[in-house]
Length: 427
Ligand SMILES: Cc1ncc(COP(=O)(O)O)c(C=O)c1O
Image (cartoon, rainbow, N blue to C red; front, side, top):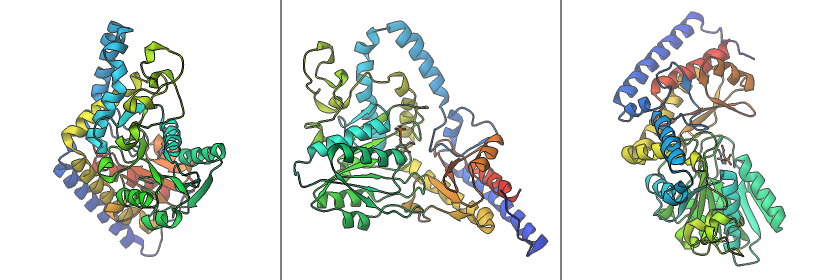
């Protein structure tokens, strides 16, 4: 489905649109020239091609060094050291990379972060661990919001059934996100655990993590944060905010690759008493003792269950090194510039065609993607864009999500992609 261009001002309107686009082109060029992180783009595979990748918030591009790193691992590590690799290095990797992630991205001191499982499984383990840490039997409510990612909603619904708990839903505006006031309204002496996304997967709304964490604690409850869209795009200080538990994926802004394992953060307050529900041999004290009965390994290692996905956690190390070099502060600054520019392009090229911005306008209230809504946007619209090497993603019912990855996205790429969305609408 396409829409008709307004015939009202005829040639004059067409002339204005052309000059708006010309000035946006100039601005994109200036922003790219002035971008202190611009040189990082060349470190990613495929950035020399005339393709507009606007979905790094679903699957980040691979770094060129990942080809070398994984090749060397196959040749020298797996191929050379064979089973000895576990003792020599691999068994420690989930914690070693977790600590680097904690330092570079999460604002977490060592010993609280581990790489494991998928986000879904990690969230399940964390929510159950959080519930196990709540001693008051009158606390039988789980709080979540309607704009939480589907896996989060399904998990909490399943856990509520398993444990006989009540769900308290926060009704969130789909073009915005959950607020501190909403959290304060639904939490109280019956609240056990609150599960929220820091950045809403659809609108890109950035929740006030420190204030909401405080509100949950004021109610005497525990909080679990989903950081999938935050890790590598916004600055985080989990220790500073006193967050209890958090999880996130590593295949978005951390470029870990399709299906790379997730991370779990457990605040040191809870690490010592961590009681997660999947008791596997890798989370046991001295796994290779293979003794009777489960005794959790001390520290964050007790969060593990089965054999860690070593191969899947190699690629993210390249990005963590880059983040440590560039700093999350500089990455967040570029992210804000990218989304601000994308909104400028939206105002000039798409708003006049009736497209709506389903993302907060305040730079401090959004993460690194924006969502554009129009009744004509469908899966087919996005499929046609993909055929033309313009790659955003579709979110039902009528949203196109434009994801901007600060280390690999250029301003020119944003303009090229969003102009193509405009052109598709005019066909
Ligand atoms: C916000 C959010 N939470 C959870 C998930 C689910 O992650 P996984 O598929 O790794 O379990 C995703 C996946 O895109 C996500 O965006």
